[in-house]
Image (cartoon, rainbow, N blue to C red):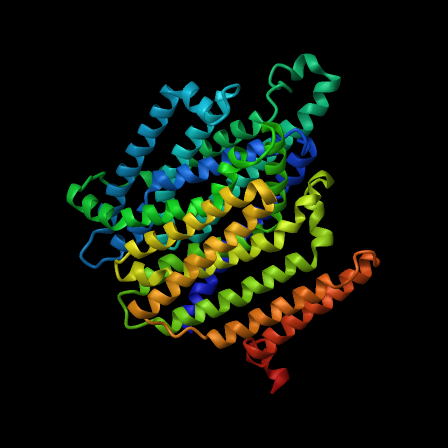
Length: 498
């Protein structure tokens, strides 16, 4: 229980930075969707380019974050030597990537469909190179349990990003109309969506500078033999990571190529899908917060005696809170839809489907530790590749028929395959007795409450619908409190229930 309390504390810190950060980042969604109409396809450009950069970020970190945790926690390794070796490795590959893209910028931009705006690709190449390099100092902060600094840097980036976006997409356009002479010296309305990428570059570079304490104070050493061992361990995780990020982004990358319509129409539809999917990102926030705390927690406990009961409990609580997050979003969609502009509301039907896919991904992440702890990461690579193949196949076959709804259901199918494969193979290789009966009860209750909510007529008064949905949410919370979080066990109120 003490282990779980430690995990919960760190998850809360990471979670607050993630949740608060994502909440603040949500300010950009109404901003972008208000300033970039669905028909213009501007938000589709943002969705597409950020999907590409997410893929490249995984490629440029090539599993070294997990490799760092694994080798830094080995009793026969020097953590500083491990950190130095990995830092030099990632810096070198990131620099080579940027130089390669920059020297062939026009060709790369044309291939990606941005021949008229190669600067988009150039700026994001610099961003992804810096982000890849930053991932290692961020990993060290997690290893050293400096959760507050980790959270502070993440939040600082988001605050800077939001502030500059508000300046360039809201304040300066308004000032430009009345004072074009002096505002025009540092703002050009023709740049449009390009400001989003430029702002990201400025903020990312600023955070890199703030890592100076983590980049000094030790002797840089590149241990080639150690590096080869880390690379051998991490390479399957690279394949796993590439397949995993493709599972999340491949629909947004290939959508413009498989959608049956004009390029402008494809970007418009992609923008609608991308904007609506943002509402489902509360599930991604929960998974990210849990991952930040759980990964160093698991590797740090791997040297101790069997912790399989702890892993099983963590899975149960993860599923419970994931289902609670799912219901919180779908039951209050009448309010959450105002995060995006009305011209994007037609895409709201994807939200429940995307959240289910995200939940499957979170369960798969929980299940993944059996092959990481036993150094059999090749299994994770195979599972993720199979899931990715399912997603790609579904997108190619179904997007021309069903549009972006096919993207959402492809995610459910792909992550479902990964989840089931990891569970059944894992039970043979590293058995963990998950409480499937309890997980099944919670899942069944959440599904029942969701279907009851969609039976409420949409023409009823808004407050009546919200009242009914609040009652449904209360039923789930009450069941959770009674079954797994009895109030009598809470130190503050326990004496009132004796």
